Image (tube, rainbow, N blue to C red; front, side, top):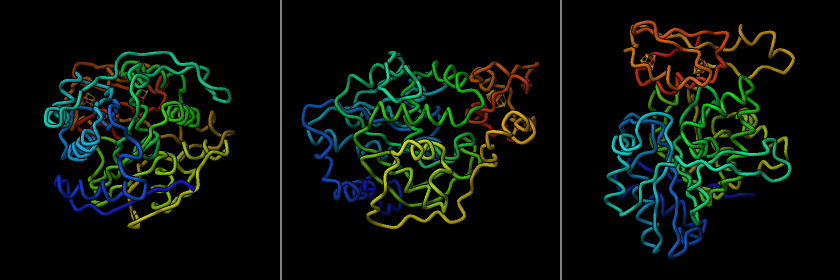
Length: 355
Ligand code: SF4
Ligand code: SF4
């Protein structure tokens, strides 16, 4: 049984967040159980894109600040790092509030953009993975995801957050390799998390995103912070709070098939997510129907021209280059589209709908 600790947190006021983080870490032995003096500690928030904290797209800077201060108080060196899909790192760091956190806490800011090819252990489906070199140059990793829905993977939690450790420009090639096979993409996410092995995962579930996340969903107050030494256990606790079977989240389903899905020892304030709106996407099809009905039953990205500004970000992020701009209007080639929904994920205008 793996502990998952949950406590209430009213808002992002620093004193309130500090109290809550100390409370969730206390049954786990405190921050000292994970971080030792002199260590270089990588903090991995969700910094999907350049977006201000109030929009709920990224991990809130108050939580990263508190964890950064706690790491520093132990005598270790915090490093705030991610590899956003789009946008200059410095702009992402500034807009998300991370640049200010780094300045205020003396943390290093690091763009995870140097790739290294890693041979995986026996039993993995992927023989090699391409991850950020920096991930293997630190002593400890603290994973700091945000509770959000995700049109492709249902939710983005502890395991999915670590996909950010794949350097930005390489994410597209992994989407292309896994194509329309969502179970294979979930296998990739699981194996990345098993390889990176964060020491601790702390979930920002104060303000969450429901509906068609991870960018254009709606904000929902949940008022919780959760922590666990195992991202799989934390993800399982959230999925069960939604009233779903763990395999509904494919990463948990793949872990279950491999016999590595942990049982959860839930400690603290209960987490109930009744009526939490999930994305409009349908669940993955059973294998025999995948080829036959995929085009009919899997939602397609459609551009809402009334919202589209013609910025072209969806064109740049689309792994198979299935979107082109005709003048200022994007057009999707559905034969080439692999239904990865990166376009929907990146569109800040909410102009990509899934139909
Ligand atoms: S759909 Fe969104 S990302 Fe694509 S061009 Fe329009 S506004 Fe930009
Ligand atoms: S059009 Fe959108 S969903 Fe289709 S492959 Fe491109 S980014 Fe993915």
